[in-house]
Length: 307
Image (cartoon, rainbow, N blue to C red):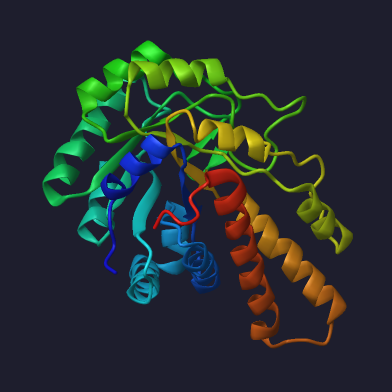
């Protein structure tokens, strides 16, 4: 099955109240784990690549690995650029085979964000590529963007932004944050704000970034075998499931995959100190990715059987 675009996937997700998982990929094992899970769950999936992943794996390598995975797949797959820093990067990946891009002007003044987003839209749309944008800002560090505090998305501004840019989907800030340290107190998402945005933009697909749940059992496992991940806390899975029923059609998940890999690697290497065959510890890490993605598809996204 060839790569597809969110245009084929989001209408059903919006109508039926589920979301498509957007999982960050960096290497072969992560791609394989995600695709095995999607295949077994019969779920569409978005494989998203950050600037850091392109630098680490190389654009050509990561595209060819995705193409190899998709060539053996019977479920719809989108290849998406996560947090494109500028027009030039978006143009590179559009020309290089991606079917969806995110232009992240969230750190820019409103008018500048509109201008750069519109420029990407005007290049992408004639080439059949979907454009995600972001309005508002989440705390944490994500590639080129670092923010110490969140700036929630203004619902009225969201309407103006979508109308003036022509973007296809919008990442909104309602209380999530990037990384493993999302909340100091009780977890809270601004569902009232999300409802208002969704009401003002009917049938328009919204996106939730920073949506890992940071499972305590994985943090505990990593720390038990030498890790130092103190105070990590994510978004409760039931909150994310609720958001998926309120116009959020794409939920980004990265940190939870990293935790699954890291905790598993630490455990396997600790229990087998003489092991030096990478297959013996990368294999279990790949399985951990698969199990994590299956968990998200079933409990958070609700996309099982939607392929």
